[in-house]
Image 1 (tube, one colour):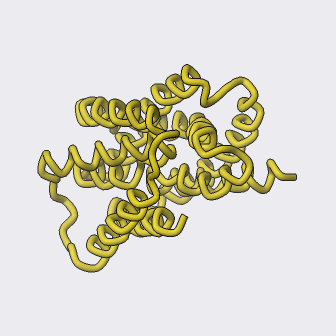
Image 2 (cartoon, one colour):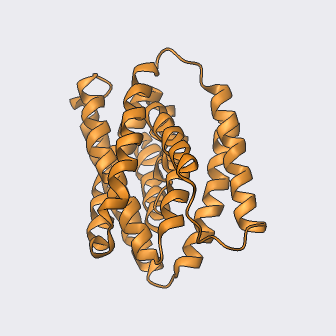
Image 3 (tube, helix red, strand yellow):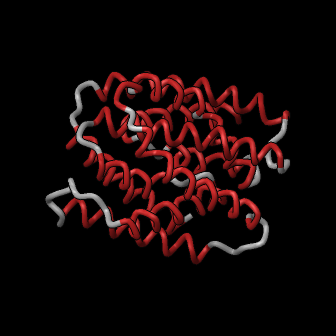
Length: 239
């Protein structure tokens, strides 16, 4: 019963959120998993729970993926995530999380209520900041999506292009960071049954999301992303 409440149902919701907005599954799962697992282990389990769902989404939108848009951001993001993993037991990140939460809430309100034109590429220094901050929090908590969603959304012309790039990016991240977590002993064979249980929920949620996104355009996706960024910020502020 515990697995059902804290893994399967959250995984279904995570799959729906990820399938519609392109990110957010880890935020949903990290509300529940730390109640039954240590935080570093929870982050690894959360990432792997969505692995099959990420493959499904990346395959669904594969014809719209722009690999040149993904490679260099991934290198920055993955390098910072690797360094953050080394700090997971040595750093008090409560203040950093609160600061990031405030930033995300401010960005959400800005894009929802102030900024009317969202088709603008970020300056290179802003994009790099997004990648560094996202990689840092991904390494610590498995939550690196909100700012990367803004980055890929700013470059996309269609919902297919946005979802293809961000899902392929996160699939690459899962393969890399999961290997590091297993190597460092954060994850082990004992976690596999729980992960498989959650994978079922993630796939169910993704299938539901696929039925929703066919009726959405890029503007609707943008609104969902901006709202979820605000929710993500509140999560960081009050966790």
